[in-house]
Length: 263
DNA sequence: ATGGTTGGTTACCAA
Image (cartoon, rainbow, N blue to C red; front, top):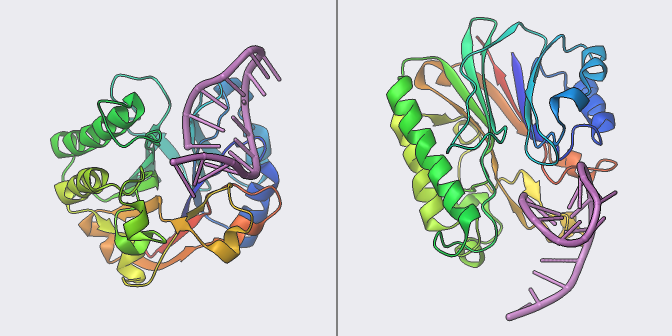
């Protein structure tokens, strides 16, 4: 099974490169974030025409939104709201009855890394805390699960272009890293990408639009993740971060992260 | 320290 996660920053605008990606890399399951489309404007028929018969999505006007596109049967497995907001940041699905997949779009958190001064940063920290609590209360490490998405945190010094220059930049502050690590430690989640491409190799999945030459500057961050619970760690066969996609026509600022499983 | 770009919406907000 080939699984991919991709923050596409508007599903409607990105249909051409979604088609390009599905044609070139043929994921069996594709998790999207930032679809930015209310459910009645989600391009369901176009996606079905690409060969994805099973589609679950939760969207809203303007912001956020998540979707799972699949060639394998899907059923909802507890998609919910977080931190008391109905803002379409999570889908939980069972994939063909074989594993449970959680697709997250964690709040970006604004610019000021101080919960007292910035409500969006407080929301982000509370969201990640609630992830830790929910998984510890509702799931165990023995459950075969995959957690993917734009977690909006680059945890390691090898996940950013400059650890020193980003320590006070939202996405790489110590408090965010500590909270993301708490989620990971809760069920012993294994980072599937680092499982295959170990540190100190630098890995990024996002490059800002605000750069004249993103490729030359290469000031990236690894914000998009694929984690698995221990029962699935041995099933991870290969991983790829598709950096080329950042250079496609009308690109997202994020690129697909692909994991192949031998289930 | 600051500004840079993009998308959704339609006056700016979020990223």
